[in-house]
Image (cartoon, rainbow, N blue to C red; front, side, top):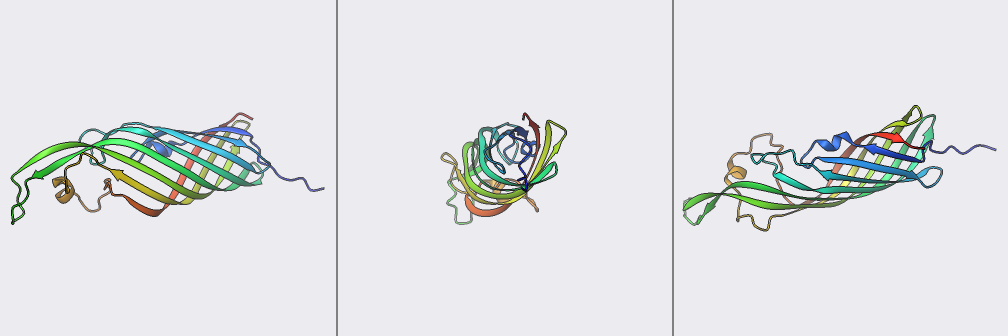
Length: 203
């Protein structure tokens, strides 16, 4: 009788260092629990950390969380295993942004009566689906490393209830090329994803 290969770990906690970079950095931890020979559930949650100053074009005073849940199927070999996993996720972040806006800009030549510097609240919400494939490798009895590539279907939404109408002076004239700053525009898009985690295996 051929022995069926199973995933070597039953319960693991993982940390994602790559979540500390980006527009909305988080301290992100995941817990994975095996529910069948080759099947496991992984829940992932992170708390947004504010690393930006008031001068940042990408916003400041950031607060919120990121949550993920995936179901993964493994193809074990040795002390490693490939996996495929559909994932659902939700990002919930509030932050502040600022800019210089024109007031009473009804001049036929495009001028404004005066300009004023505003600070306003931004609500960022993003539910989405991620389809990923990756590799996990076990080192010794308790440690593992995981990385994956995938494709995300993103539903990005920004709401700015108290922002003055129109674009700020900075948005119009101070964007360079190439410009990697946050544009705060709502859209639906497909986007590649990647991940890297360091893990501790309890059993």
